[in-house]
Length: 108
Image 1 (cartoon, rainbow, N blue to C red):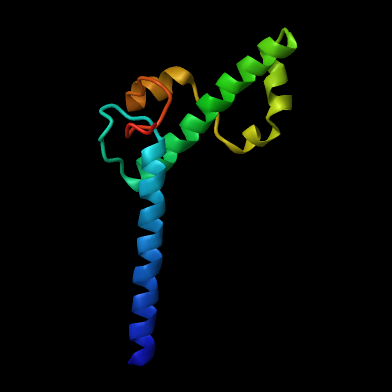
Image 2 (cartoon, helix red, strand yellow):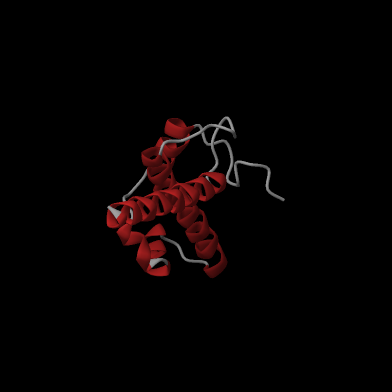
């Protein structure tokens, strides 16, 4: 019986940590309206899309700074991008109502 209580307690602690991590991630993802509560699934999907969006923005800035002519060079600048699914910006903006990059909860 003691082992079952310990196991349940450990699982509650683990679930609280997971929920806390999702809450922190939700604060970093822009949504419209800003106080919209996303499910865990929506949070993960939007985080992947937002990361792709930010990589694209950084890649375009890098290309402008280096004077590179083709966007194909972006993949060389961010090799880890291949682990993320391809996303069209219009999908990001339309599906989730993202109005502008930045935290959703008025961070300084």
